[in-house]
Image 1 (cartoon, rainbow, N blue to C red):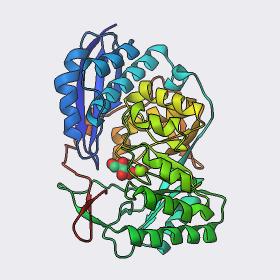
Image 2: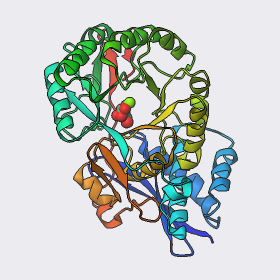
Image 3: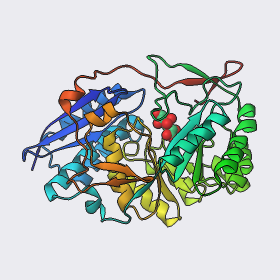
Image 4: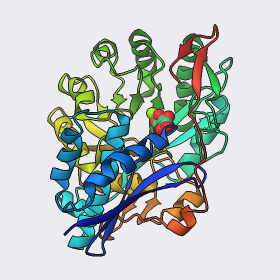
Length: 402
Ligand SMILES: O=C(O)[C@@H](O)[C@@H](O)[C@H](O)[C@H](O)CO
Ligand SMILES: [Mg+2]
């Protein structure tokens, strides 16, 4: 069996997606996601110029060998562009293998460990009152777990506050828009939101919060401590994780569960955090961390330390990644939760898929492969549109983490 052709499809049904389609001499094809929000075309070039020429003629059944070929073979390892390109190939190959076997991917991974996949949705508002109302909306929709982010008085366009009720897309301008940040104001405000949420809705639902890399380790420890009475499911990206050691300081001061990893690309980004038990949930996902082949290695390492998975699932991860993540979640023994930010109806139409939401959970179907396809004719109607993620500056103009 041979790979005969591969091509990249870029489409923008509301936001940009990079999709790789691999074709074989047996008429079976597979698709994979390589979207890198705000830097999409770098992955397109990596795939078109440097990966696809190597793939032609290879045996698509050799998933592991092709993974190693692309990872070791480039000599230059790791990084978001390389690992997304590898992930796109990997997803497409698992899709092909599943179609050849007549089985859904979760069966190939080892079979079902659970029926439904608990997901969390994004509730947010301009202030505490609006966010409390938004959380109620998610509870009404049946969610068991909800992430709550609020605008903070005095901070311009703080991360996490959307303009629409369900569809929140931060990459909203042809050049990066400038938002603000002020740690003191946030530390005064965020705990009050959780106090209000618990007062209003009690303790039956899981509540989550994303720090989006904006606190120093000491500030993150302080926030974690202040949030303890509200029993969060997790506090995410409370401080940047390039220095994995930084989490030791946070961990020593708070029992609020910690989650990290949406920007991780390999097991090496998470190794110290996992082996030193500095986190509770690992958020690496299929598109970010080199596909299913590599993600399951990360999950296996995490399982030795009772750390559970919580795959990134924002809207910049295409339905192809969501489908693959749900196969992974259905199999992985140490599953924790799955993030689920809904795609717009236009995106869902371009990517027909075999998964559905019911009572706070997502369910993957039994279509052979990963069960997500691309309607190329429809995709062609939505050409690429440059869109950047915002940047953040402190009040005095200093660049900060968005
Ligand atoms: O937890 C999350 O989902 C966020 O941190 C993301 O929305 C992140 O900001 C985007 O994926 C960036 O593209
Ligand atoms: Mg996040």
